[in-house]
Image (cartoon, rainbow, N blue to C red):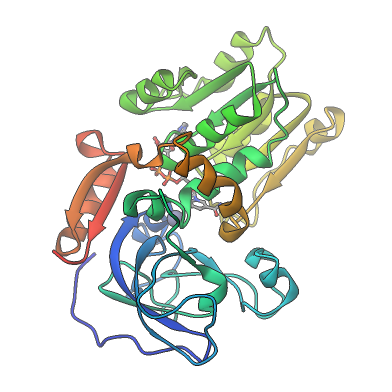
Length: 336
Ligand code: NAD
Ligand code: ZN
């Protein structure tokens, strides 16, 4: 990981804009790139960023130069029916792309970033939403919420959340919006378990590999109605499947690239399980999440434990990856 000088970006087309980045964050998805599990060498990282529009192509209409905007981490062509319906994951005009995950598509952990289809991926920062809060609307609060939305949580039901990084924390907090009676929260990091307990969940330490047994114990052998997986590892997805009761739902938001993932078909069949996995359609969530933040029902900025200048990004990655110093989420400021 290094911070280098590169040429300023140029517009990507008539519907594109250039953003002067004011804040950007490091995501658990960046760690998959950091470890070389996906991507390759030389990628300009960063898919969580907010800033000011400094230039627009002639076809950009909904936002304009001078607007302060947050940018969806996931962007489609911007013009097909799904994109117009704010669902870029279903884009039929080339499919969804995530900023800063390929050599060709540069990310926003930078002073400037070129965004395609600016009308569909930029949102003017709403009233009563702070700059730091808006960073969390670019990816991970929408992702946690997608995990909860797909988990089929009913009032009174029981939920397990695997992984209590910032994404898992948001899955937990938005799961509560559906009125479950219990949320079991699973991780291996003591301060992350403590944070989940403070939010009203029942912490389960998975460091000895016995999470499933503990969940079954805690539910009189039945399992939970819904399990949300926010790690992306084979082991935790399997644990999530093994933890749900008959008729239950597994909602995977962790990124897993294993084409050979062993799915326990007899269980799925005999217990009538539902498994959903989803890349987040960020813009589709804004109408729900913005009012919750603006009215103080969610305070997502509480996840930021570390604020560093962009020049110290390499330290930020190391701290986040090694979970040093009680880190939960790292915010970077390119002006410093
Ligand atoms: P993170 O690395 O901070 O959090 C992962 C957590 O999982 C850590 O707290 C870790 O201790 C815990 N963990 C690891 N192995 C475990 C195990 N065996 N049992 C229990 N807990 C375990 O990352 P994050 O930023 O919270 O992101 C979480 C996942 O969400 C990543 O896979 C990321 O790529 C993914 N993500 C998906 C989308 C999407 O569109 N679906 C968007 C953003 C992030
Ligand atoms: Zn992300």
